[in-house]
Image (tube, one colour):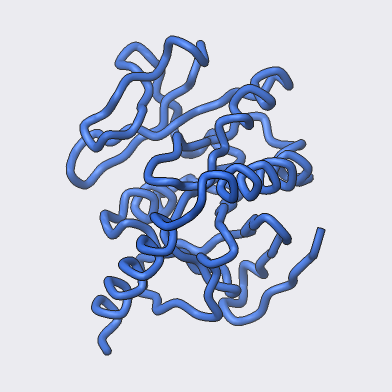
Length: 204
């Protein structure tokens, strides 16, 4: 099976499993993910953090917005600008700075200031599936891949996933970005940035 076909097949299976996720289990796993994310040293040290607004039963990291806001972090969120481009914008008011976007995702309002990728310290990423080598499979639009591959972006990249979203190995292409860490309800995987095969896992 070709890479693109395998990706499409994996997306469908992962989406089907996620759609069947019981609400109470999503709450339990999301809470565990948030606790582990908040305790990461890289999160504690970061000044500017990009978070996403969850859709389609993605891990609910909404509590992190409030927690990190109270810690004085500068929070930013993604906004789709065109069919091929995404940018990040600063959130200045958690209650009033979001509006429904064209893809059905809550996005920063037009008056939110754009934040260049070079100013991001850490980015939390959603995904359809991940593997134990730091690879991520998104929705297929490539927004995060293009954005995080841009010149000057050195942000620490953290994926969040349910247990069933983590596979042994995903097919990859040259443009696919690689994570620095992956947080699941039961563990944190950190990846050697110089080695796509090696990884270290810390169970917490």
